[in-house]
Length: 198
Image 1 (cartoon, rainbow, N blue to C red):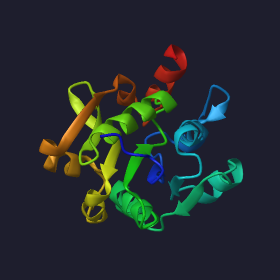
Image 2: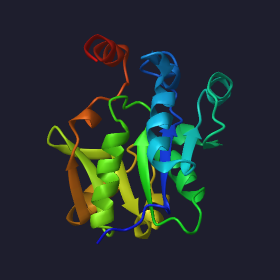
Image 3: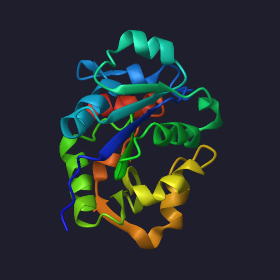
Image 4: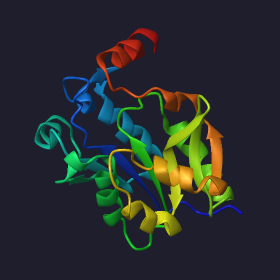
């Protein structure tokens, strides 16, 4: 089966306070542009105007530093509750016609449009499955959830994001090897690794 992606949307989670980094990681410059711009650019290459960015901490600073005109940006007022609250905000912003959603982070800079397309292609051939990135004997985001899991996503709580749901439905997973998803930027040493090696 090869399902059209016209009704698939992307949610980029960019609401965290970057407490371990010490400054907003959404705005860290890598290859002459902020990390959030990397995520938006790569996502829009596939999704065009079907991209939702969820902001929270530092929302005003990010909005004045980055042109968000090409995406739908939403501020999560409850961002301090954790990542699950931002996922809920993003899911609530989807149109009723949404057939699936890609959830990704703003701080996985090695993820590019080709990787996103791999995940989507997996979903197109297995549209009832959750399509997860597989790396370092683990699975996680970026991840594609079919619409039948939206209710479960809306019930998430805490700061573990979608991981509990991925583990709960492990029999419904399609795993796509994606070693690039392993690097996310949480601490200054992560960013140093990125800038020194890539």
